[in-house]
Each structure stands twice: as structure tokens, then as C-alpha cells.
Length: 65
Image (cartoon, rainbow, N blue to C red):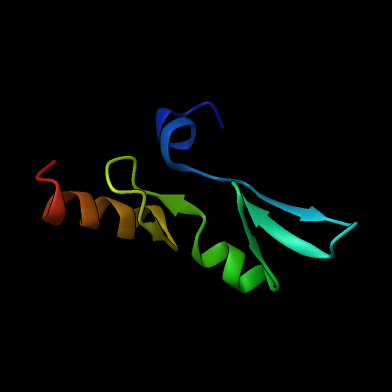
């Protein structure tokens, strides 16, 4: 994962064994599916997305990239 898109926008999912919850950045989710749905984040408005493709479309529409 040395690509710039991963360094800027990707938040890896981690499992906390103590709380039995999934973490994405500083947010906590009960299920892996919820955590995965918030894995990609816009660097301008911090809105979360399921895939890089959705993030790219958001940036084209909302931020005129």
C-alpha cells in the first residue's frame, strides 16, 4: 500500500479485542460491514465512503477535482 491514494484517504480497519469492536480511525463500529462502509474518507470534508470509486466521484462532483 505505497500508493498516494492509500496514504491520504484510506483508513484501515482494526479489531479491538478488548472492546470487541471494529475501529476505523477514531470511530468505532459493531460490525465489520459498518466499518468497511466508512473505510475511505474525503480529505476536504471528511465524509466517509465504501470504495475509492465512490470517493473519486464525490470529489469530482463536490470539490471539482
